[in-house]
Amino acid sequence: MTDRPDAPDADATAELASALHDGEAAAHERARADDPEVVAAQRVVAAIAAQVGDVPAPPAGLVDDHVAAALAGLGDGADDRGPGVVVPIAGRRPWTQRLPLGAVAAAVAVIALVGALGFATAGDDDDTADDTATAALDADEAGDGAVAEAFDAETGATAGGDGGTALAGGEREAYDDYDELAGALADRVDRTDAAGGSGATADDAVSSPAPATEEAERSGAAGCDPVAAAGLDPAEVRLVSPVLVADRLVTALVHGPGDDLRLSVVDDEACAVVEQRPLPR
Amino acid sequence: MLVAAAQGGDRAAMDALLRRHHARIWAVCRRLAGNDADAADATQEAMLLIVRRLGTFDGRSRFTTWAHRVATNACLDELRRRNRRPVPHADDDEAHHGALAGPSLDTSVSDRLDIDAALAAVPEDFRVPLVLRDVAGHDYAEIAEILGIPPGTVRSRIARGRARLAELLDPADPGPGNQGDAGDRPTLRP
Image (cartoon, rainbow over all chains, first blue to last red; front, side):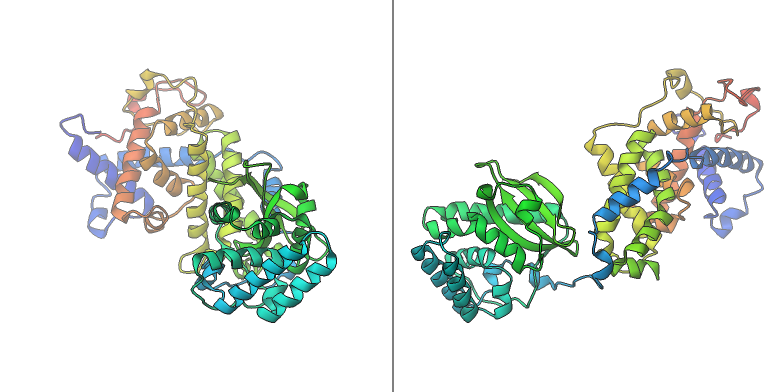
């Protein structure tokens, strides 16, 4: 458009014709609407616009496929969920920054106690852990699941947990999308690895398959074992965390094998995997 | 209100909302992608993102504007992820690029293939606002909001995109309904 001596005028005419066609020309510009050059250019603009706007229809059935796939992201129970769960920005802060010091200390004590008694060998030990945790934490917090909380409490203690607001009942960490969730969990797993040498108890807690199931039951996913729903080997599950992703109740599972960690996300209501991807390093 | 109901988790409302906007989102993605297969995948990704991000819609803009912003970005991201440019039609040879005369008014299948090829050769900065105008029917202010650029820039980019298309679409090609003397056809150049 700019390689001819008359290019500036031509460009101006073309832009005016384009704006006139779109009904976006200013009042003083519309005075040129009857200029033969502008009229001719408008005719071209109209022809081009018609061709651009003449889009082939989508293949039959595409809308049904697309809507069904998009709705699958809502989970089967979306109708009954009511208004979306609103989680304040503070809710995005790591749990390590929100747990009261007393709760952190109590949780660490619980972990130590559970470790001493042999965490995975006796159901009575689990009850003991729950009772102790309930005494130390808010009852609803304990209901959110011993495994993730024990893990977070442990890392919070390591980081010197600076206190904060205790979690309300049923409150989960909220993420906008799976990218954000994966990044956050990758950080946690890294911290776990870094602390792994210092405490077999915490490591046991996050990798034990039995608490994984308990976690799912306590987080409100009654009847749904996310580990089973994801078809995972319980021994390879490294972390179970009930969270909100785009206001959707899900359980995030970080799992092996080995160091080849992956993230699987199970919709709590649909009890089905909705996302699987490698965990970023 | 449909959007509010969908935001509240009403599945039927979400279904209706998606169906209401599917055709236009498909059309935008189809024009940006240049072929049905990529457009289908891009539209799917756009619909998923709309569902996932619906909670962030705060009503400050029209829902259609918001949805098309999400869809346009999703479509472009999907196409970039595939590292594909829209595939020009085989007839899009160099001779076409020198044409200055305007296109015929015919909109046959042959011309639709040509428009895909021509659009593929238009820079993305011009192509996207052009598609949002001529396919989605947004005004310049809405396109400016969707793309995050000033309305004046939208206006000039659309005009330049159309001028580029006028150069690329070859009126000398005697396709169906495209016969006649090219010299009689209008051009964007006076």
